[in-house]
Amino acid sequence: MLLVTARAGAQSAKKPVAKTATKSSAKSATTSGDPLTVAVAKASTPSQCLAGIRDYVFPLYKAAQDAKRPMSPDSVEALARYYTVRCAAKVAKGTSDAELGALVQLYAMGGQQAEADSATERNIAKAATPQARAIALGQAALSHAEWPAVEARYTAALDSLPRDVALPMQFNVHAQLLARYRHEDNDAELARHARALLDIVPLVPEGAHGNEELNAALVVAYKNLAEALGDDGHADSSVALLQRARKDLPWITDIEKRLAEPTLRYSLVGKPAPAIDGKLWLNSPAGTTSAPIAGKVGVVQFTATWCPPCKRSYPELRALVASYAGKPVQVALHTTLYGVFEGRDVNDAEELRATTAYYADVQKLDVPIGFQVDKLKHDSAGKAVFENAVDDRYGVTDIPTTVVIDRAGVVRLILTGWDAGNPKRISAMVDKVLAEAVH
Image 1: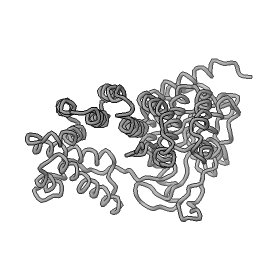
Image 2: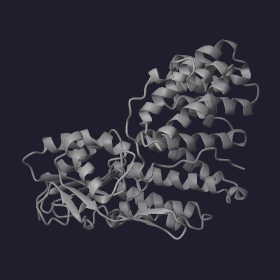
Image 3: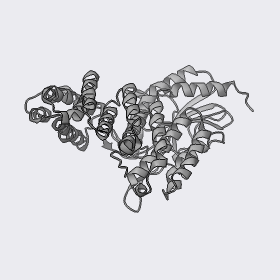
Image 4: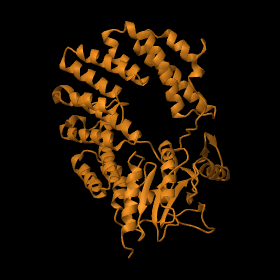
């Protein structure tokens, strides 16, 4: 049976995650009695070093969250990298063959590519059976995700092994790397691993159909590839792929529900844009109730202050505003109230003030910003639900989602996440629409 060791998935747009940076650095782990130094002192093998990450770095992150002084993901990564470099230096010399895979992972977490490459080659060379080689190549691919060109070489070698020997490892590696590249919004690498997973679908044994983690990973592969196709302006191909998923995965009884939102999203391209309204609009005339894009080319991003990829997009949006100054192009943001700002619980008035200041003073985005001011609700099971009618109209499941709407009010492009190619994609579509005659 295929087993999935890590579910492939994307960052949720519906759950507010406090990600405020604090001044955490390697200096916080230098005293002889601090937890990380103690962890390094205790470790004598790469596996014990890796356990130290779980036992010491992650609890520090959680403690900061609980204390309402959240550490940013970058701060946590820097702390983990500092620790892994120190721990690897301590244990590397005496590493046994059985621990080489863990050493590769340790070097990769420390950003030490040359050392990771050397340990990887040793680990592959010692593989005495096809099964052992599959494991070594899988470890190599997963440990080199920071270096996609190197990872691709190891993944290709893994895929060249006979399916009867390597299928479970092939599936797990592609699923985990798909999740990694989706989180990073790297469309090219995401599409590579999604296509590899789709090639495996016909080989899934009937006895594995009840494995929910496997089913979820397969659905995610179709959805993520559809997103990559949509980002490249091929929404029709996205819809066709999602329809194919329904035929390829007939044993997933709720497949229609799982694919409803992306299908809706890409079906909108070429159709009149649904209303983008809000109960409050910043940087807009009093009484504004919808995105002020009528008669203009609208570039509307569904966003949130707590969303890391959204933050990556803001400098590009500022540049977009400047490049089309004086032309009939309107950039706008649409968000909602989450009851949280920078790790603090806040009421609506406090969040509005903080959000207004954030976009004006920190991000320097003087564009219309619409709010869906809905209260936090809970479903029958007590799960938090953030209702946003506009998101629902556009099938938004992950943010940022960016929509380009032409001057006739027709959706022309929908981008999910913030891939490095998005600025060029948006500019190309805006230029194309501006060159068209207005009917």
